[in-house]
Image (cartoon, rainbow, N blue to C red; front, top):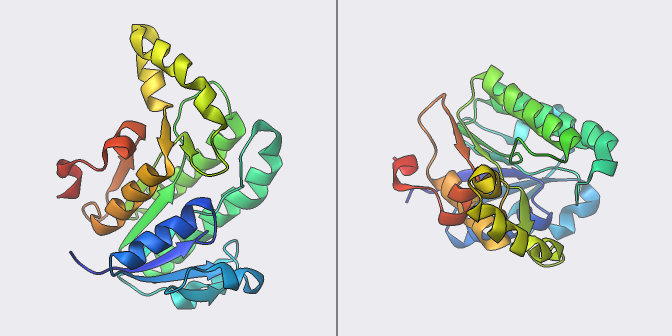
Length: 224
């Protein structure tokens, strides 16, 4: 395994803290972009980079060619009522990350987007799709991970929908959507992100990791 230098935005959040800890356990060198007020939440063993994930200039100097940049910043517990927050936080943060990745010539950008198309969460999907388009336009080497909902501590309510998923999986017209918009666990999500970091795609290509792939882990073909 190649030891990676990894910079994480959103590394003190729900997915971020667990990902940073997992990367550290595997021997990677990890830095976390964080505001000064949140520096104490950076997992032990990771270096805190004081900056603002919405302002590329604030952390550009902390990024070097060859780094892997993992972008996890986003509105907590997204819902249709938070459309303006998606525009105020989610979009500027990926704009900043793409700018930093391009200017610093990072080796690999990992972006957590969202599964789509979907019948709900249109504003959230629109902003995340804009993020994907920015990455593609910049010509970056990237992995785009598309979960729908990540189950874990404090995030269990969708389990009540599991019977509906089971029924949908048996109906041919609904099967593809049920798989694309399926639920994943926090353990599966972190494992997929670690695998993405350790196994980047070919240079200047964009790889999509959807819900079925998150559930089973990156396939051997994607790890080449």
